[in-house]
Image (cartoon, rainbow, N blue to C red):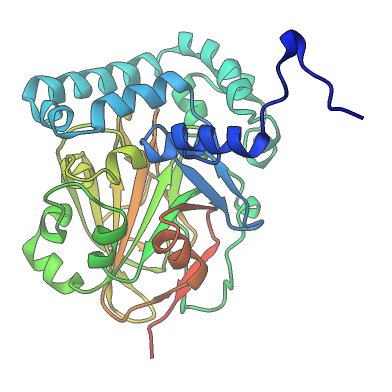
Length: 353
C-alpha cells in the first residue's frame, strides 16, 4: 500500500531531515534554553526534588533586563549618574507608594500572580486583608516553627539565611570564575574595608537571592555576637543573574546599597560577614528591633526585612571555617545554576579539619 499524499500531491516531509534543518536554525532544546543562553531568564534547581525549572518571570521584565545589562554599551549606560539617580529615585518612590494604605489593593493581585495562597499558612498573620500596606505584607513575618533549623544542637552546622535561590562557592575566586562576571568585583570593595577583606581572604561565599515572590526576611546562618554594622551607600541595580553572570557588565554587588554585618561566631570565635544587599525597587533594608552592635544572635534568628523588590544576602566565611555541602557547590559550579532552598536548611558545616 502506497503512502498517502498530502494535500496538493506533496509527500510528508522526512522527520529527521526537517528536525535537522530546525536544529540548524534553532539549536536549543527548548525556548527556556534559548532564553537562558541569551540572558532572558534563568534556571533554578529544587534542592528537595532535584528538578530543574525555569524561573517564572514576566516576559517584558526579562526583555527589559536583557536590554539593560547585556553588552558593553548598555553596561556603560548604567554607570551614568543620571541612570543611577533614576534607579534610586524610582526605588524610593515605590517604597513610599507601598507604605501608603492605598497600596493594600496590590496585595491580592500579587498573591494571585505568584500563587502564594498556600504559603500564607506559614505566616504569623495568614489573613492578607489584615495587612495595612503592601510593604507590610511584602515584609510579612513567618512562624518560627515553619522554618525549623537543621541540626539545631550542632554548632558546626551553618544554614541558609533566607528562602532563596542560592549559589555556594568554596572560594571567592571560584565565585568570580563561575558566577560573578561583573568587572571590578573584589572583597575589599564588597566589604568596604581592606582590613576585613584581609581576614576573609581565601574564604568561602554563599549568595542567597530573594525573588519578589519569596518570604522577604533574612536570618542568621550562625550564632554569635554582632561586632559591627556598616551601611554602605550605593545604587539600586537588579540582582537577577542576568546582571550578575554576564561578562564585562557592571559590578552589581559592590555598587548597590548594602549593609555589612560582622558576627563573631560563638563556636569558633571567627568573623562571619553577613551582607544585606538592596536592589532595584528595594526602598529599604531594615533590621529587627534589638539587632545591633553587641547583640547576641542565634542561628535561625530573624535579623531583618527587605521591602519591595528582589534582594540578596551574601555570607562570607573565612578560609577553613566551613565545608559547603557538595550538592550546592556542584549546582553552582558544574551547572552554573542557583538552587532553591529555605531558611534553616543546611548549607555546610565546619570548621574544616
